Length: 135
Length: 284
Image 1 (cartoon, rainbow over the protein chains, first blue to last red):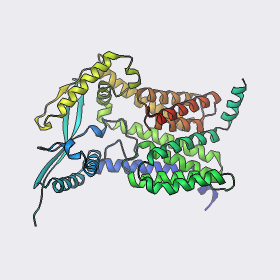
Image 2: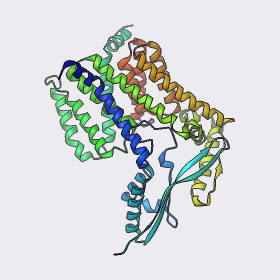
Image 3: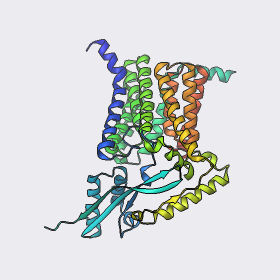
Image 4: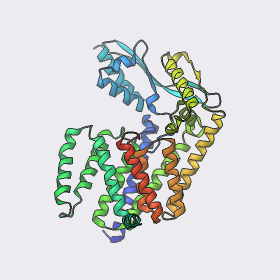
């Protein structure tokens, strides 16, 4: 390898990795519903943190479900971070298995704020109606 | 006077000083992160420390930098979508210093740091520009009415704390209702004209970050560039105690800066951030 190429690689190799990570984050945000706060794209403080997204399951208390169930807590955290169809499906399957129900309805809501009128409301991000298939 | 001569001597070798500060931040960050998957990290940490204590002046390989890089990469592999953004910056900076220990060319290291800083700040600007919630001022409006910004100063204004507390109570009550009903609440403003102020604040944030990024790209050693960069870091710290990230920005500034007094300021900011991380008053 010539000296010039080596120097160029050393100078711009690591910054190029940073650009690749940012590009991957943009891809995940736009195709997999990844929240902008994570993934190395430096999108923190551009919107309300995903922690404040709400998981709503009609007829069930999310707080009770995650109490003493670390796996459930992990799945719900991941669902708030990336509320796409695949993660909703995984959460629904796990929930049906854990609660022994036949069907489940899960919704993810995010905060919506209007600074002109001071109104705080919630907007639906994604939802799933899941029914256990019996073979 | 004798103290200043000692400080000046240390500040003259700013690359070594910045590397030492980075190593300190790394050690603290790694120790915090080692709570997760500790069993796998123990042998790497032990070997790194053993070699560092006994052989750091005898072997040519920077074992401790290698060990810390390995741990950072390990966390990236297992928690890529969960780690904070400054984990990525810390990893890139660590890899830059690790490479520097081999090529020994300060111009290459400084170019690494300069371009990395520009990329990080420009990406942050771009993310803000494409976020409707940020551009409209709605994000800052929410954060201010919740008492999530400028929180170190809120203790001096009990009336503001009362408003944020009331907003929190209203939000908790709303959260307990079925969101399908479509109920909403009206947030109380911590001070008048908050909607307009939030929008102006959002625009100023973007403008300031953009100017700093361009200044670092165009004139990375200029005193003006570093004055602007220091203002940005202090501004962010006043808004939110993002001490882990700000320590890294201050160390990056120290790498690039030629002005002795500003180098000292960078060191003080980095040390202040490190102390707040250790005492858990700031975020890691």
